[in-house]
Length: 223
Image (cartoon, rainbow, N blue to C red; front, side, top):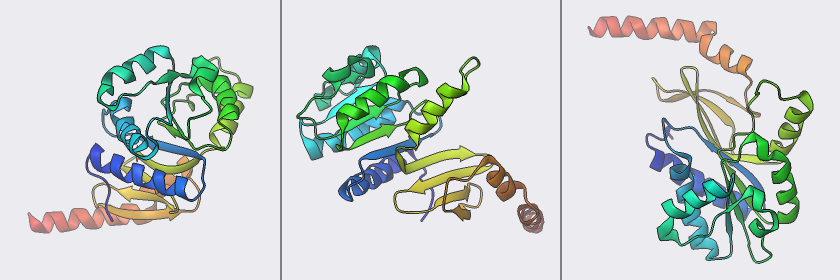
């Protein structure tokens, strides 16, 4: 196993993990892929294509607002979809929809998202690259707790994020893995998402310092 080297590889792995999670009965799933400068619609497109293949017309893509929905409709024109905005309420959650793909909602949509999820009920909802964890100046503690409570309802089924000198990877059913990009290997695994202190210990602990010195020594010998 190795880290995905392209957005296409990461998206393919994420789609597979998502479909496997849905097949097991999971109905609140989180996908978070931070890959270079990739646009969120490019990240979400493979999911839209996979849902189109799996559910036909009986699923609903939901974007942050009507403007984002219009952009997705234009960029995904070949998929013949009718995206909706979070602010469209019941129009975004129709009775015939079997699944929902919620793409990049921002922090201001948290309350509306909670209401939408009540309408979704037990049907699968996949949250792709949400922007709900921003700690903006002026946002109260209560509002942040609401966001945390909302996100905690979603199981991370695929996460790929740059962290310090490496990457954080989690695939449905597996542990959280901290990878060294330079060595392309797992440095440590965690049962729960590692904290910033955990990551600091992994990358800057005595063992990593010793390994970095050893690598430098071998590079010097090769030169």
